[in-house]
Amino acid sequence: MKTVYKKPESITNKPTTYCPGCPHGIAHRLVAELLEEMNLTRETVIVWPVGCSVFGYYFIGTDAVEAAHGRACAMATGIKRTHPESFVMTYQGDGDLASIGIAETVHAAARGEKITVVYINNGNYGMTGGQMAPTTLIGQKTTTSPYGRDPKLTGFPMHVPEMLATLEATAYIARAALDSPQHIIQAKKFLKKAFNTQVNGIGFSLVEMISSCPTNWKMTPVEAMERIRQEVLPVFPIGEFKVAEGVE
Amino acid sequence: MEKKVLVNEERCKSCGLCVSVCPKHVLKISERLNSKGYHPAELFDNENCISCGFCYLICPDAAIAEVRRPEPVKR
Ligand SMILES: Cc1ncc(C[n+]2csc(CCOP(=O)(O)OP(=O)(O)O)c2C)c(N)n1
Ligand code: SF4
Ligand code: SF4
Ligand code: SF4
Ligand SMILES: [Mg+2]
Image 1 (cartoon, helix red, strand yellow):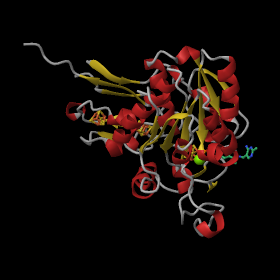
Image 2 (cartoon, chains in turn blue, brown; image 1 turned 90 degrees about the horizontal axis):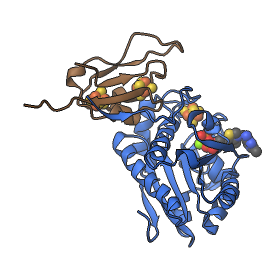
Image 3 (cartoon, chains in turn red, orange; image 1 turned 180 degrees about the vertical axis):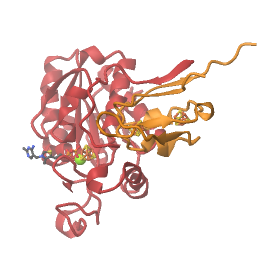
Image 4 (spheres, chains in turn brown, blue; image 1 turned 90 degrees about the vertical axis):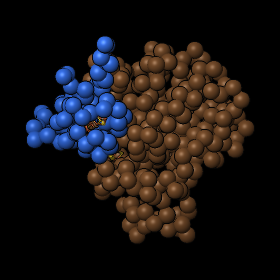
């Protein structure tokens, strides 16, 4: 028998704190697989966020720090500038990155910091019980938009990759989805380009991953993946929004 | 034949995603319980598994610990 897939070593033996069927775990595995394949595990520092993935350092065995809510890109900036030989990435939810931390994110991108951002968009604040996020869809019911998000009151969903792609200094910006095996294979390809962007010293890279939150969406994990395809991807399309010269 | 899919039953949270994506319908949620109280996924028809790895790819908990493909038989 030939092994075709095997749990990466750097996914620790500690079971995650995520709800059953939460795609945070899929994103973790993709990160761990690529770090191993690219031989980066030992030189990596992951800056973890506030949100459901706040305990990420228990689940992926690399060096790590924990940022204050939203400040991961600012922290990663300092780490990368003082340790340019390290591979520095942030892992952030949509509340963390696009709400409280949008200033840090945009300015790190505008400065062209040579860091990589893994951005998990599940359309709400999962950890705190499913409040509306900047990414919540129009009409989507959350605990803070009980009648559905009304654009007249709270505006429209925020497309972070499209925004950041307009900044001169960004090098690789893409959006993937975690709803199906095919999309997960594609997500890994995008993430590999993002990692290569940093390894080759080209500039700022970010991959948004469209995720789900079965618990707060009040759906089974399988129904939540279906909702991604039916409702989320038409608003947040998969694609590469910026591929600077030299990115491969 | 040896199992083509190895499930780490203690890591499984019974989410059912692997069952939903298996193109050959050879996975199911078993009746057993792990120490957390979840019913782990199980490969019940090893013969018809095509080692595609879809179950591994979608599993959020790395509970599909390994997927293996039989070596081609030498003549
Ligand atoms: C300064 C500060 N404000 C608010 C909070 C409460 N809080 C904890 S997690 C969170 C939002 C997390 O949402 P997201 O980043 O989308 O992560 P998810 O849980 O959805 O993965 C908030 C507002 C906090 N911990 N610290
Ligand atoms: S609350 Fe949502 S994002 Fe958080 S672990 Fe549960 S399913 Fe995942
Ligand atoms: S490897 Fe493919 S066919 Fe075999 S159990 Fe997994 S999903 Fe099903
Ligand atoms: S996808 Fe993983 S955690 Fe979910 S039922 Fe299958 S083996 Fe268990
Ligand atoms: Mg979120």
